[in-house]
Length: 418
Image (tube, rainbow, N blue to C red):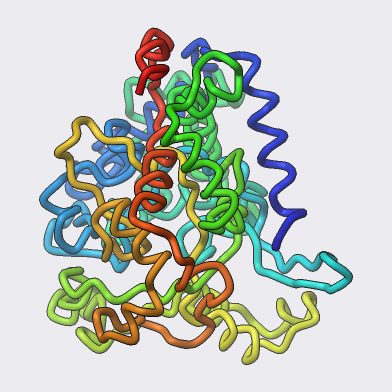
C-alpha cells in the first residue's frame, strides 16, 4: 500500500549515508535558524523558545517526564494555557511535501490520499512559503497557547534588536525591515525567519542520520539478532512499514488508528481559561479531536474543486485522521528511566504499549479495555489483529530503538555477542 510514496524518502537517506558521520558545521542560514529556535525572548512572557517543546535529548520532542507521564501536552508561555496535542518531533520533518491530494495506481487500482503538510492536522501546508516546515515555524510564535506574541511585527522588532540580527543581513542580503509586507499580508522578514528555522531543523544538528540503523545500512555496524528479527517483522508481519517505510519512516499521509482519548490532557479543561474574552476550548470535556478534518473544514469549496472533491465528503472521510509521524528518534531519551509519550495525544506511554496496541487493538476494544476517540475511518487493514507473539512485539520495539540518533561507532563491537 502507498508504494509510490515510499520511494523518495528511502533514496534521500541512502544518498546521505555516504557522508556519515556528518560534520556538525552549520551554514549562516542554519545558524540564524538556530538562534531563532532557542530564543526565549520570542515569547510573551519571554520564557519559551521552540526548544521548550522540541528538545534534543528527547528526540526534539517533549522533554519533561512529568508532563509526558500525564496529559503530554505542553503549556504555553502563559503557563495556564494548553493546546490540544502533544509536540511531535522537530527532526526529520524537512522532506514532507506541500499539502496536496495525490492519486496513484497500485495493483491496477487508483488510490487517492491527502499527503504532506505539517502539524498533526496538516494545516501548515506549505502554501505560504513553499515549504511546509517553514509554514509550521510561522505558527507557534503567534499562537496564544504557545509563544503568544501579538503580531509578526512584534516578533520582527525583537529579532531586529537581538545580538544575532547581523546574521539576517548576511543570509538575506538586506537589513531586517519590520514594515515590508508581502502581497499575502505576511512580513517578508517573518517569512524569512521561518525559512531559517526550517533550515536549522534540516541541518545535521537536528536531522543527522546517525542512528545505529544508519550505521548498519552504511556497513559500519551490525544489528543484534533481536534487532534484525524486529526489522523483518517491522517490514513483514507487523505491517509497520505500510505507513512507516524505511528511510524517513513516514509516508507523510494521514490515518485514524482508533486511539483512545487522553483524559489527562489539560485541553479538556480549557473551557475555563480565556484568551481575548473567549475560552480556549469552548467544548471542554466534550471536545473530540477532528484531526485532518478540522483543517479541511476551514478550506473553501473552491480548493476541493481543484482536487475534484466534494468538501463535505472529504471532511467526513478525514475525521479522526492524524499525520503519520516519523519513527526516527521515537525512543531517544537521556536515560532509560526517562518517560516519553506516544500518539497525537500522548495516550500511550511506551513503545511496548504502542506495539501491543497495534497488535491487539481489536481485542482491546471488544473487551472494553479501550474506546476509540473516533470510530469513523478507523484503519482496519494494517493494525488491530496482527497475531504477534510477546517475543515478536519485543523484537519490533528493539528494532525501533535503533532509530535513535547519536549512536557511537565504537559501540558496534559490543553488539555482536548480544
